[in-house]
Every structure is written in structure tokens, then in C-alpha cells.
Image (tube, rainbow over all chains, first blue to last red; front, side, top):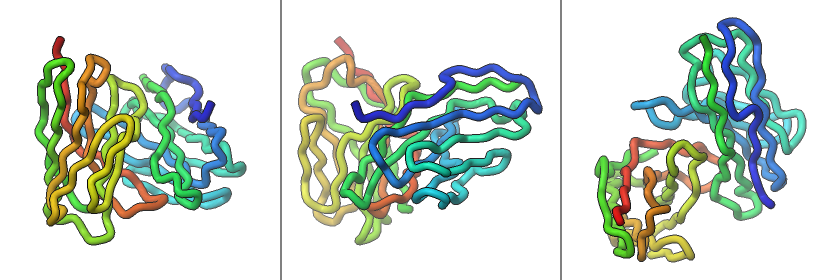
Length: 114
Length: 110
């Protein structure tokens, strides 16, 4: 089954404790991205990657890092989480090169930073 | 990306057609109209997209006006499972970001 998976689905952590949210897709998509969703602010893009070893900032990249060492994986790293990073996070992938213009989203990761 | 304007909320009776409007008066010639929806707090789901011709798939129909300044998403027979927030997005096709607005909260009522 074609899918985007995220882990963990739920995470409660404390300020300053480094964490990684993993994202993996099994569709061989080139393009992957991370969004965060906050009440009243909607979905905003954090980072995106056009292909392996190619990443770029989205609209709200501060406080986040990403890497794209393999095509299928695009982890989101919070090196020193703060309470304002409490949010619902979504990973997405697509493959324009193969005519797949729809973006597939993962199920989301709900992060709480205390 | 061009901005879109959608009603904040709409109701629809179960079994009836749901017509969700979207205004995008500043759309550029190479920008497509996309529709996504988000059921509760699940990941957004692609519905349909088009450039200037009307489009139909197994989920919905997309009607784009001739001047491309507005469009309507039609769910032909709404069910309770179609209750969701629907987002109209205009963007250049390809591996480009989706810019989500506030969308329309559709409530399908039994």
C-alpha cells in the first residue's frame, strides 16, 4: 500500500531535549516536505526537499533541521525544542517528474513541549 | 501564489450535492486550482485539480469559470464521512509548496 508513515504519532517532551520525528514514504517520490498545523494559523511549510541531499527552507524553518540522505526518508530534527513548537506536524511527498502532482500526507505527529 | 477566498463554513444535507465555492481573482495563467480536504486532524487528502477545463474524478467535480477567477468543488452525493475542512489552493504545478488558507468547514448533516 502506498503510504507516508510518521513516527512517533504522539510525543510529549521537555524544553531543550533533542528529538527526531521520522518520515518515510514507499512510493519512490522525489519531493518531500514538512508542515506544521496550529489553531488559527493553518498549515505552514517548514522545510522541503526536491531530492536526495537537496533541502530548502519553507515558511517557518526556525528551530528545525532536516536531512535527506535517502530518497524514502526525511526526518525532522528539533535540536532544542521549545514550547512554541508544540504543534501537529505532517510530512508529505509527491513526484511531479512522474506526473504525480498530488501530495500524499502522513497521519501526523502531535508534539507537546513542556 | 495567488490568494483564495472561501466561505468559513457550510452545511449540506446527507445525500445532496455539496457545492463549495472558491474565489481566486488574481490567479496567473500557469497556476492550477487544487482542492484538498482534512478530516478532523488527519493528514490532508488530495481531491482534484484543474487548469481551465472542468474536471471529474471518483471523488468530485471541479468547475472553473471561463475567466478562471473562481471555481466550485462539487461533491455529488455528500455523506457524513465528507464532513471536513476543504482547502482551495492555487499554485504552479510541480514539486512546489502547498500554501493552505483557512478553508471551508463543511458539515454534512443527517
